[in-house]
Amino acid sequence: MAYLEPQDGIRLARRVRPVRPSGAKSDETFADFGAKTSTYASHDVIYYEGDPARRLFEVASGTVMLFKLLPDGRRQVVEVLRQGEIFGLAGSDEYDCTAETLTEATVHELELRLVEGSAEVQCKLAKCLSNQMRILHEHAVLLGRKSAVERVASFLMYLVPDRGGLGCIGPDDEDNDGYDLKLHMTRQEIADYLGLTIETVSRVVSDLKRRGVIRIDRSDQIHLKRVCSLCQMTGMH
Amino acid sequence: MAYLEPQDGIRLARRVRPVRPSGAKSDETFADFGAKTSTYASHDVIYYEGDPARRLFEVASGTVMLFKLLPDGRRQVVEVLRQGEIFGLAGSDEYDCTAETLTEATVHELELRLVEGSAEVQCKLAKCLSNQMRILHEHAVLLGRKSAVERVASFLMYLVPDRGGLGCIGPDDEDNDGYDLKLHMTRQEIADYLGLTIETVSRVVSDLKRRGVIRIDRSDQIHLKRVCSLCQMTGMH
DNA sequence: TTAACCGCATGACATAGATCAATAAATTCG
DNA sequence: CGAATTTATTGATCTATGTCATGCGGTTAA
Image 1 (tube, rainbow over the protein chains, first blue to last red):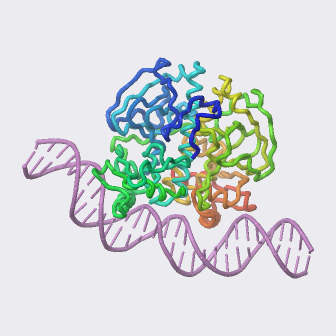
Image 2: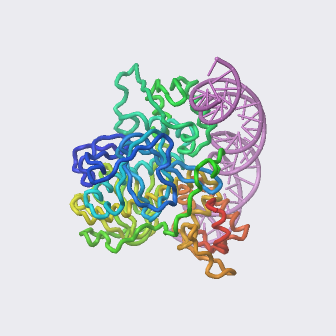
């Protein structure tokens, strides 16, 4: 899981800081390349799978998910994107996923024809995409090989900055290894992201609560009481 | 499974046109940018997960897989790469996967510092990566939501050119809808790619044979007797 | 030829997680 | 506020797939 060390010239991503899973945030945004900025309400659809791909997007604030549907309605959320991450490119002339906001969100939207011309944009693109690719690889392991508990634990750890990777810093304070987080996703959305059913997600969360690893303040607001314990449950240790 | 119905306001995706999985093959290869070319035997490791990332690779011939291991030995093959596809970028200074050949293979290897400088390379990169991203999205659906039969059927269809998308051209000849293919992967590798066990893969393959959809000429050489039938079993129709 | 090995197939059984069903807890609305 | 609606939890089952164990058919080596 490979953290990014600023040393050793990472060529492609010149200044990829030790950012957490949210991807390489370079200093420029698409706004600097002439993108327009739009605001969406929570659970607005930005585009549908199959729509003609005309624009490239960058999350400026909020959270966006990409998902695909099978004809019988089964859904898989394939990416959950936060500030600095890009979407809308599928190496095709149609979008390969539906993009929907999870929260209120602002998004930079750049016409694709502007992308082709700009080396700077291409560069930022390659940087972001390779980051997102790493996350997709990790997610494939989760979907293909992890148990329900491991999936939920991994998901929660993913929301804790600077923890969980190999370069994990460990608890700041040995006896107080807590962290508060907001999910921004319903149980159904989490289930569709983790390749589980809503019931299984609910049961695992209840179980973590029973075991004293987390506390549930509201259904979308969870306090991790022992981050290290949770981390041990991700299957990665 | 809490399916989404189209009237939920979620339009069922329109069909993506018949782009093939193999990715955008632009005309240039890395060889044109000063890459050296190496040859590997079958099942050679090109690099290990965690190795310092110094080079970017492009498959010139043969097949390469990328996989990740969990500490207890569970393995997930995350990509299977063929001619024109690239690997070795993880938005990090370490490789995020192990790269191993599935067949004899030749590979163009480009020093990462050369990548940084070249707008042309960046451009090719962005193009390839977005293609591979689309494939990873599709694979997430497979891993997260498909049954064993659907996974194996999807895997086999993936090896048939110009078939399986909704822009599928259909059989050339109504009464002779066959196709011969070579797997280049053991049952175990297929299992690790599809997130199944070797036994399940084996059983599904036997079952397809029993149902007359395929014929097994050698364990790694399969004749699809009815491509359309197989396609119906992918979960995508 | 026989033995050892490897990848694959198959049967018997176990189980994690899905499915179905019935509340309960939040949230929205009149 | 209380009713209506949505979202989450929990329990009782079912089942697809995993696990374990055995054997087969090629291939290599002696």
